[in-house]
Amino acid sequence: METYFAPAERAAPEELELDIARVSNNPVIDGLMHSVGGVLAVLNNSRQILAVNDSLLDSLGITDARSTLGLRPGEALRCVHSHEEPHGCGTTRHCSSCGAAIAIVAGLETNVPMEKKCILRARHNGEETDLCFLVRACPVTADGHRYLLLFMQDATIQEKRAALERAFFHDINNILSGLLGASELLLLKHDGGGGKGNDLQLVKQIRQMSRRLANEVRIQRSLLHSELSELRPVMHIVPLAELLSEVQTLYATHSAAAGKSLHIDRQNADALIRTDSSLLIRILSNMITNAFEASETGDTVRLWLEEKNGLLCFCVWNRREIDDAVRLRIFQRYISTKQGVGRGTGTYTMKLFGENFLNGKVDFASSAVDGTVFRLCLPISRPSGNKEK
Image (cartoon, rainbow, N blue to C red; front, top):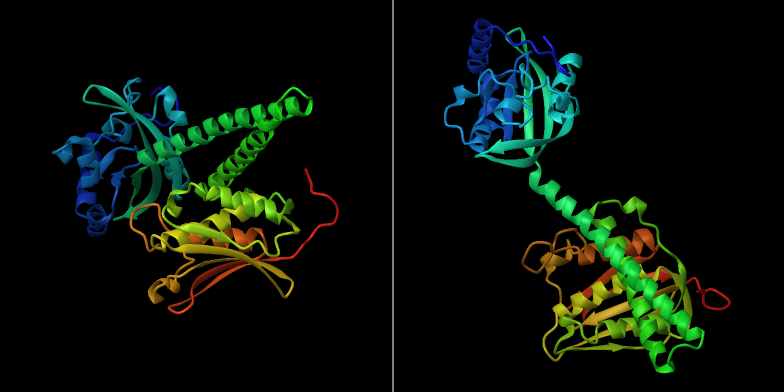
């Protein structure tokens, strides 16, 4: 029999019926069919379906399970390519690149579990749609006969979300590159005498915010895709006074600061430090935002610097005490005092960036009398010479 990938032969009708009976009467396989979440099918050595669970039937809108028996997975899932060749699923030109077909054939040939990702174009109700499955093919032996358990987890939504995220980061980086390039050209124009002096401060602010936004995208991409090993601090010389001014500007119109105030004590701010300013501002903004969100209208959040034991500490204070139940897990990811999804990364990233990337120490103290203070303490590494470009 002709085939472009997997063997085309199917079991004889009598043999198929015997296999279906053996599988349906096996208590272990029957238990799996009723307890495993996601799509599960049992295949014979010819890749034909001997049993399916309710998840598969529900996803296909099938009420009679026997209508799927004897079919191959692509035929049951209504893959648009499954009938392009006379011998069906596994034998067409497209099957050699199908993750499910590869996992099934490899599992049967090697007799070891195989995992693949399968992107399948299916036709349902006259319309075609792309589906993504994480496929695991596990050979098993029951009553002296070998079968294949096929687990298929629908990952279509996750795959769509990942594709949208990749597209977003690609597009936003293009926009940022254009914005940053335009600000650099404006600065060159000013330096060449072609610009107005009162535009200079605005141009510098555009460039500063463009760089900050570009770094935020870089950091967010690493967090989102758990590629923290690829995140490298960009260490440069930063004037503390300039950094504190940027923080002050950031919260001048910040929604969390509405009806409240930020007081920055600039003592010890007349120095230069060597650090990654984007990560440092990210940590400070998380500290300050959390302090504002814990405060009431009319309250003041305070930021100051302390030097002790060879460390420079950035301290953020608000007057509210943190509950005992929250303190124990305050730096744990996804733990938050606020409601809603997507919460619980602020304090986690404070600790992560401050200690793992800036070699500092992040901690806090909280009481009913003294309020709450978060501290980021960094090793003092003051450079000599002029500020780096």
